[in-house]
Length: 254
Image 1 (tube, one colour):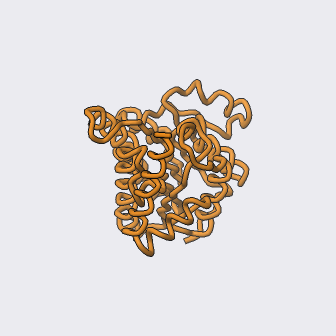
Image 2 (image 1 turned 90 degrees about the vertical axis):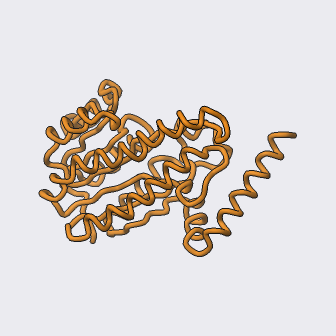
Image 3 (image 1 turned 135 degrees about the vertical axis):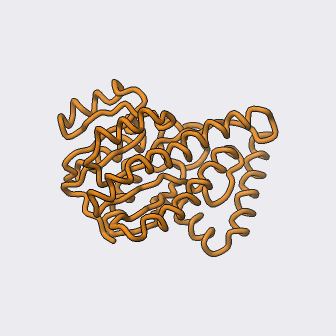
């Protein structure tokens, strides 16, 4: 089902920087009537408001806070496009004690936060449809990356939840789109030793997919390569990523 961005009303979580900021820019460039920009610190959205005026409505939105999510849903009842972008990554190492705290934090934001926001906005999406839900997964949803083992596990959960949400919304005029980017040129990916894609490219490719009614978006060269490998030979992709880990470890030791 194709979804038009023009004249839509969108909510973007984690909108103050990186991919979230790029989504706000691209939505407005395509003619969205209004974008609710969610962030834990609304003051960090001041530059967006300065640039776009009342087309951007800042919201205090920590996706781990049920109270803030419920308040956002009450204030933004006209939303028909939901972009679940907010996410975190830790450098927890799997066999040490920090993995438990790291995974707990990533699950709370990346998975439970996504589900909490989606639940809260379901009545509005159904009432205002046709519309879209966009979930930011990752190439790490397809295979566990050696540098971010707990983050990879959380993004695998996003992949699975998105599949379930498609079933939930199958009878509604709502397309549920999963996005699987490789490394993106943001603060979160600063230390990743791979070529990175600009966030505005990701936002553009994703909204192209939404407007075409696509349920899966592979928005960059790494995502296309890994996504193709996952759908054709998932165990082969696992081996490929393991070889990347071994090569990375050899280079780090030299």
